[in-house]
Length: 286
Length: 354
Image (cartoon, chains in turn blue, purple):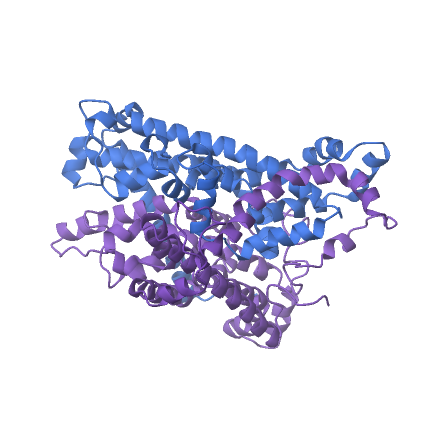
């Protein structure tokens, strides 16, 4: 095909550059400012793109703060335990429904319905309350252990595993549990990784469940800290910070943002190579 | 123009080819198999003779055990809460058991539709949904067209990596970032003040709030939304372009007559899904900005439900608002799907097996 015309190429280059900058610059400014010294932030009026005298003071302060440190612990616990539980539940269900099993069609319908309808937040709240999970860390985990979208991606992958393999194992006398453990799981590392990461990102980012179900500040996940101290601008008291001398509030705020942002940016490169496979399957089917 | 089927950074040969259900292989198929499952029949499964229920339970018991955790999760956090919506028809108070609360029929709904705050929330919801549909919906399509025409594979992959990333950030983080950039003391306003201009309150101005909402959604999800359109573009037969070019069709005619029709099923599908969720306009996004711009501007159906029910203690009214929203959303999906069928598209599901 012919080469695109020059004006079109220039326009396109401009659009692509502008979009990329719009995504990257805010994150960069926040990260740089969190490393900048107090004097430089005051001089620059709040934001610094190139810290001349990088310091870890802001990070030292927030990691010494009992409130922030505990919230990180809550977020890590919820993410790790939640992801493992969610993978267990989803893998079991997806494997069972990847074969024509008794009641399978009914279960499949029951799951697909969850993609189109939601029970509503008042009934969910009452349910969590009935279960005695209010103000418990489990209220952040249990409602999220099964996601229909992730189930569909997982099931499609399992159905792509050649039936000959599982049938051969069956003829050799392997039970379903054994087939799942020794045949299906080793072949499914890629999809388990990507679905695990999807769940992990979901648990790490979950803010609304915490707002709804958790009153107790000591059980706040990091997203709640972010809301309270960065978006709403409540300032951390010396007691909450646990230190006497503090760096300027601006760099502390930015450090909190970075701490919430960092895990996502760190897992992102691993997540990325599975996008087309996992997501397109799920998006088209779901 | 060289085009590759590997769209999003997966090693070549692993994207469309190895995924039997991906768009590339059977684009015109209905994407969700509700009720009838092609796959079981499409897969070469040895057919077993029909067995009695007992024999099947005995054969499948391990599979049935594997379904228990998932079924329990569905029951506890989806189906029982759906039944909990019954409080919308009751005069529910927290000291009643749900089974004992007195029935009041539709009177809570009557009360709801006379509540000014509810009508305001409904109006706001529809306005923000309309803004998103008109201003946001075309963005991923345009972005996919631009990316699809990028010549350099390396640049293309780099660009995709950048624009997908914000999708994985939480709403709290996205709004925190926007606030740091656009807020009263944010980067842009600081720059404006220093160059002698008056600061503009982007984050707290209720007149431009709808635009801010769309900008945030676009920043977070426009790149991600493009994935599905890129897949649709990759599935268009390249020989169509060549024959059109040899017939003398220019760039824009080819886009108009080949590319857009090729993407039409996916566009219709996503439009339907959007219509179905039209009453759900980003709950977290609104509740996080409610303080900054004021309750009148940021009140949508979900926040109304929350503030009336959980905060205000009017549980039945809150549940009625949520239920009305869910039912209307479902009706909208069914209707939009019907319309898609009338227009000759597959939509999200088919009423009966073909």
